Length: 457
Length: 70
Image (cartoon, rainbow over the protein chains, first blue to last red):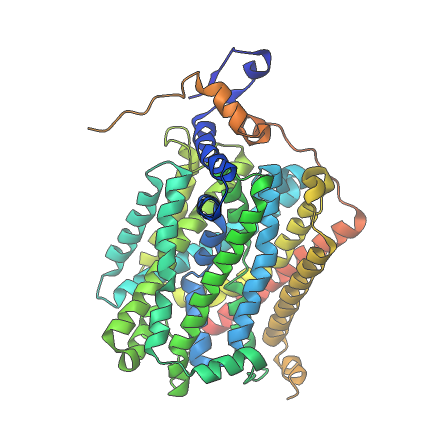
């Protein structure tokens, strides 16, 4: 319910909502922490302002991403892909930092900005890309949850229902801050892959050698290219742009908070890359034992690892897959709901009471429910969805990044916060790498002979 | 027994909220649209090229899935 105050002429036109009041409460805490001096105040400020960056990075360490890292370790062992994964997270930092600046400077979500600034024609293209990508990814999250809990003998319907209950429980507070903290607490469990990696007793000399020399190099073939695309798609995807910008706005961050937004993004990338590298290390013994893991799903990886790391280690691996799926299902469905609300000019905030945010919560719930229902249909060839979802993400990124590039260099909306030239060079390089990887993928499918010739065969 | 939430914020919240949030952060402010920007020809060329690239690549992905499913 809204009301109009009549205190002063300026205030008379202003309508204050619950969402504004909740956001103002959050801002007061930030202002208090900023007014104080000392290390503990800075640490508190980071605690208050961190969230969207860590969530987006750990959220993207989702079911298909962890499966991509597991497949990387099982197929190629310790080598080129360890530093390559760190490089992909550096790309993610470059891209996501731009969304922090855009959100803090404009106080608008990504979909909203594209629609208003570039018009509905391009806006709808962007939304269709996001909608298809998000829905396919959501399906894979429920597949990961089902497969992970399947390791413990939980039936598919119970696994999907449990995930749905967790997703809904996180929303119940109707406060962005509480939702963010609950999801962050769940996301930290992504680091469960680190003890799993330690249980495999990695060859640390080989690990450090790989980071320094990027070797051994994999052969240039279709399998390698698919893993390259899957690993890139595991770190940079369109939903991340929409989610982090909308979350930055919903959290109420301003231009004064951009520095902490950057720290939040880098912290998230560091945590997520540690989990990704741990997953590669965890499955590297499968490569050493020359086990074929081409069509492995989450549960199969856990089962294959059991003789090496024991039941406890394998259980941790399966739980890691469940966590990856649940956190991503929460963040990706939120990203869809934010985008819908922004485009349809409906209220869109996790600070909304259920009565005021019916369409927002309905979209969020329906997206997750539809994906969950699809996973439960018997006989559907879901394995193909898992295989292509990261590839689709890589292919959809260049158009999304060009919109982001244009918005973040738009002086009319960004003022002095437009990207510096070095940042534009970096983001241009990211677009080039993603487009080149996509074109190579296309050649490998439709003209395999030309692709083989490119590889010197 | 749960504490019932008030239906709307108290009127006294008004000035406090206004002084805490930046004007653009208010929900009401988002009803004002950001002015439209029109693309230059090179920008349109890039956007259409990438759009065609995406459509073509999606067809390639569908073809790959069809091959794998056979």
